[in-house]
Length: 158
Image 1 (cartoon, one colour):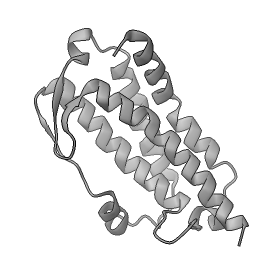
Image 2 (tube, helix red, strand yellow):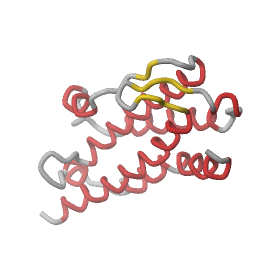
Image 3 (spheres, one colour):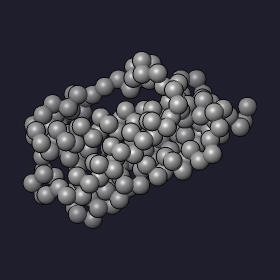
């Protein structure tokens, strides 16, 4: 990956928390709990997923950097949603998401070329590089911010 693309992805990564917070502005409990369709997550569930995913992503990056060649385990996000009480308030999960992302961007900003070249093996996708990690997690909250908007809108259409 060239430096310009990496810089753009880092900037996109940095803006992910803001995108989610903006998508939640003035959300009511009804909007947080509305499901846009059968089997779709509510905005509340998406926020909890983002916290769990972000904390997992933060550890994945640290393992790639500090323990190159490590095995990166996948996880069942739907099982997390079922078992980790995704019906709870969202404030702590938003803070966890923000803190994990803020601390991780400080690391990403300082990576050397040697560190960018490190990799491991992901249990679901195989070869897993730091660049691949950045590609995935720079866009992840933006995708979910769009889903939050759809979920909230579904409460208004009822």
